[in-house]
Image (cartoon, rainbow, N blue to C red; front, side, top):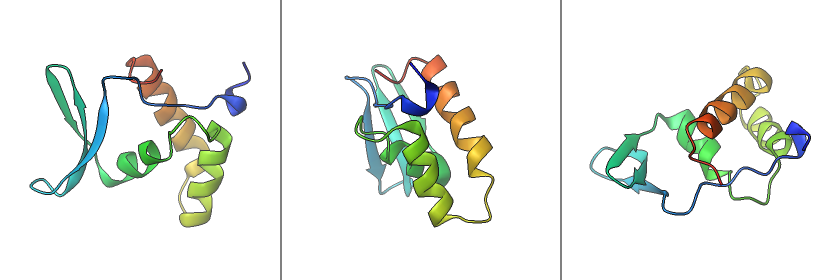
Length: 87
């Protein structure tokens, strides 16, 4: 599959949730909690299996026109995929 056509989706059993105590997004996994920085939370909230990786980059580039989205978002998504957090 072409990387741009990949539709990332968080794996079943992993929950993305806002934590009001920490005031950040977190990933709840079996036996583990990952506290996300604001940028990671925004990226992962777009990973619902309907948008392609290219769509996600485009959306974030529109929201943050001066950020290096074109290089950083694909790198982040690959890192998360390598961790096994995507289906």
